[in-house]
Amino acid sequence: MTDITMPARQRSIKERMEPYMSIIAPVSMILMIVLLMAILEPARYFRLSNLEIILLESALYMPMAMAMTFVITQRGIDLSIGSIAALSTICSAFLMKVYGYPAWAGVAIAISLGACMGLINGLIITRFRVPDLIGTLAMDLVYRGFALVIAKGLVLARFPDLITDIGRGRLNGFLPIPVIIGLVTMIAGYFILRRTYFGRYTVAIGSDPQAAELTGIAVDRYKIYAYVLMGAMAGLAGVMLLGKLNAVQATSAPLFNLHVIAAVVVGGTSLFGGRASLLGSLAGVLLLSMMINALVTLRIEFFWQSVGSGVVIVTSVALYTWLQKKDRDGSAGGLMGLFASREAQRLIKFTAAIIGILLLLLALGYFGAGTPSRSG
Image (tube, rainbow, N blue to C red; front, side, top):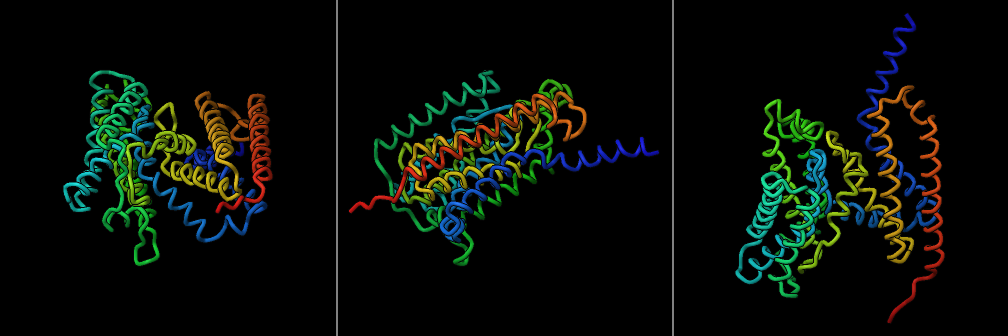
């Protein structure tokens, strides 16, 4: 009787832990950052105003991280979201500033233009069979070029209150509107993923596109839907950035694609397709924002910030990719057996070395920065 019930109990524990496995890497790194900052700069880092800055920075990427989760789950990628945000916002800004369009129309136009550019991406990938990586990279150049042509080097500034409220306003003087928008998009994405055919088909397409097509799923159509959603959320993020800065130029949002893709992958959405984690994407967005904010708080130069952010991304992705590989290989022995293998020991040593190097770099940057200079 014992021999029969014990395996069932072990499977039950594993099944219960399965939904949370995807966020092990980002949550572990978040805890490490919290611990490090509690030692080095607790007074400055854990101020309410600084925590609000982290949330506002994260909110900018939440809509795009939600949509990118669907794209990557379908084994796709979109490298054009920064240019989509810039071009849609430039067009919207010109209509508001030059032709007197109301602010609400400018917001609707930016999101609609983003959706149209996402539709173009989807058609190029599905109709012309251009690989996602090459197709979206090429369209990134096209959209950025159009933005440069339209803007002609101009910086458009000073927009209506509705725009600035979207980027940095408060509801009832307390709740930051960008954070509300970001969380609402994440909740909506969770509902779409769990409760709609689009969400179910997204996972099915990512798991096995050929099998999904044989079962009657219109694979190309749902891929296009994912890119349209991605474009619309990039347009919304462009409006949020416009409101945050109260200005826009053609070179805006240059690193949107890197930041969003890193957050989604670090959060546990599988690059191999078929596995999505919107909770993990949210954790990934928070992780990267906390990391950058911690480096700024420590007065570390921008170059060291780039090094630190890159190390965090590589470490988290390496850990999760290894967990995925073990899951596909069907490791025996549960979690303890998973981490007791020889390959696991090598990975643990590698991860410890990377974290040690990161801490050393942080220390060098922190003590090398010294007292910030005062410029008159």
